Image 1 (cartoon, helix red, strand yellow):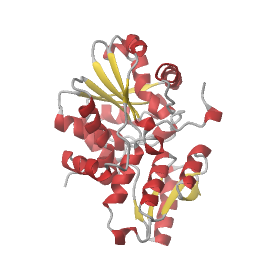
Image 2 (image 1 turned 120 degrees about the vertical axis):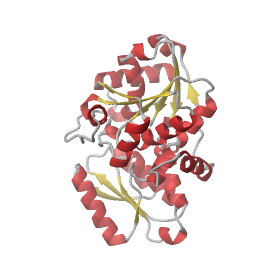
Image 3 (image 1 turned 90 degrees about the vertical axis):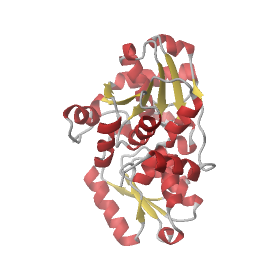
Length: 314
């Protein structure tokens, strides 16, 4: 059975209709001039919980039968998926057990707690996350909803692409951030199923460039010690997500942290929208590779807007 398909994404769109926002697309003539192209910003920073993650979490939780919800749901996440799952669980009156690294931004911990999530802290390593999650599941019997290697989550994230294609008639390229690959694999699947001529570009920080290296080598190469301000993109691409990436993504580019900060500033000053570092990588790709966008119509997914205003990088 396919990990994710156009059918599962279409079913997710129906399931989460009314549970999430249909987010707007914003434009700026000045930002267009930076690359001599047409840029369309898909504002998932204006989504519920401030990120696209609301889609996948809602689809996963609302896919579950009542008896599956009795012992709650569980996941590990540094932030946005954690808040999204806590929110979706609250909508269905079930517990959400969230394993979070101690070093996760306080603003994201506060968001999870605000939705009623039960936070279990762990060391800031993938091994610690997974071990702690296994302990929580053994203790509670909760249903695991993985942040990106879960077909229900990925189908929900893919609904971003359905909206983009509905909102824009002509399009040459879609640019998507990549961390674990949930958003990328969902969006790329939908785009290639409906409009295969549209180029799908993935953008990631140079300090966490496992997708770039894996794509180039044709095999999954996880990153050991990622180092980037884009805290939502520290995770290596998941195995099922990597397979979709190799099949449906056309190119992967990396961007420096300095470009991410510059992109955040441009989007604040011109679009009047708050973008977190992970959400700014798509516009950072424009700043670093303007020639790829010249004369083309490109949709850039702003994946989230959850920044701690006390710790802005500019």
